[in-house]
Amino acid sequence: MKKLLIAAAVMAAFAGGSAQAASTGVIEFNGLLTESTCNVDSVNGTAGADGEVTLPPLDISTLPAQDSTAGDTAFTIELSGCTNASTVAAYFQADTQVNTNGRLTNTTTNGANVTLQLLDYADAADSNNNAITIGSDAQSNSTEFVDATSGVATLKYGVRYFAENGAATAGTVTSSVVYALMYK
Figure 1 (cartoon, one colour):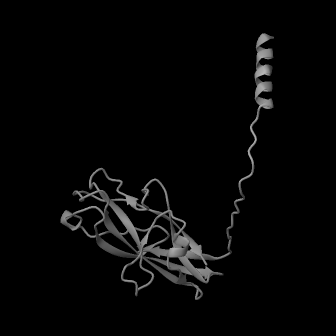
Figure 2 (cartoon, rainbow, N blue to C red):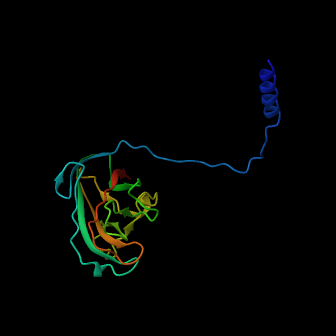
Figure 3 (cartoon, one colour):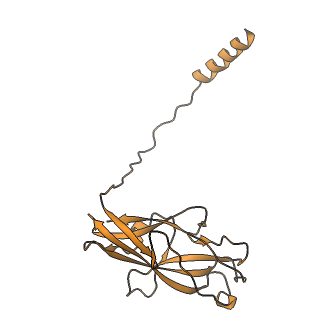
């Protein structure tokens, strides 16, 4: 009985002393759901939505210092059956293989200081091939969207080695990324 009275007294003390805060502002959230769809026919020539991209084997001297890049390798995502979509692009999603800089971490135990950086190759006139920050919402504005009004589209991207924290060391480099299609 004493335990019950103590518990009731503690609950009453917390219930009567709740803190109140004044309103500071309002946050509005906006989004868009569409009926647009495309089918993924192939990734880099491999049928289906999953694919593989092989970067060239390079000497570690091509990645001598932090932020150096090498081995730019193009890949495509081929789409068909696009309906209600005027333009389309891939959105590369953050997961456990993406570091805080939006690059893919090396999942092998060797090949230190190396990550993989994705590139937007959609605009052939853009010699910079803009780096994609994986998982960033900025992709919806910074990625080139491709015309899909004909029902088909080819999304062009690239990947390259990136020396993350100093000179790269020799070893295997492996990673993967999850993607979804986004429409405008």
